[in-house]
Structure formats: structure tokens, C-alpha cells
Image (cartoon, rainbow, N blue to C red; front, side, top):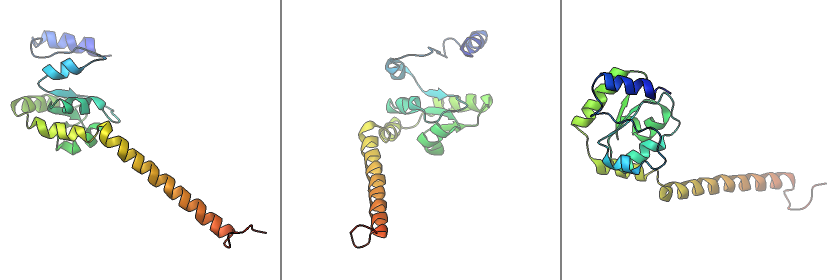
Length: 153
């Protein structure tokens, strides 16, 4: 909603050669491949697939302190976290990140932790555990109602 206003400000400041705002893209892979870093300024982000995608490309990430990026970036271990609605801190973190981007391989490994190859078995295991616990509870309740294995009167 604010892209037009931000684009005008970028132009007013003469930063068009330094800032790209391509907008929504169904196939962002080429943008990730040519980017130097990734910044996410969301006020609310329950997870943030874009953060994981950027990290999978090895990009350094700057993100606001909302739940998704905090979890993905491990509270700053794998990227910079800035306060919500603090544009000065965001700008400084972007400058710092461009100056010292860090190790792309660490970011790729962290992104792998969120891959389907890792998450599907983890979710399957969790579901099996929950269903197993449900089965055990049902069996205990049956034993309580009919301890001899027969029908209750």
C-alpha cells in the first residue's frame, strides 16, 4: 500500500541506483540470486517464508522484531533484528549488513532447517506422537470402565 510513497522518497533522495523495489513476484528466485541482502520491515509476520528463501540463497537478512523472523533468525544469531517502526535503526542495520554480510553458508544451513525434507518428518513424528498418546488415553479409559476386559454392567 505504501510502495508508491516509498518509491517517490527513494527518487527524491536520489537512491534509485541503490534501492530496488520490484513489488510482488511469483518467481522471486532471480531477484534473490542478484541481491546483496534482504530486508523485511513487516509490523506482523507470523512466519516469513521470504526470510527462509533469502537465507537459502545465502543472503544476509535484516528484519523487524516480529514472531516469524525472530524464530527464523534465532533472535539475531542468523541475521539482524531491529525494533518495529524504527526506520533509523533499520537503515543502520542495512548499512552494517552491507558492510559486513557474514557467512552465507551459515544462513543456508539455517534455511535447510525449514526445508520440507526436514519439516515433514518432524511433523509426521509429532502427529504420530499425538495420535499414540490419544490411543493410550483411550485404552486407559477403556481399562478404567471395564478392567477385566469384559463388558461393564
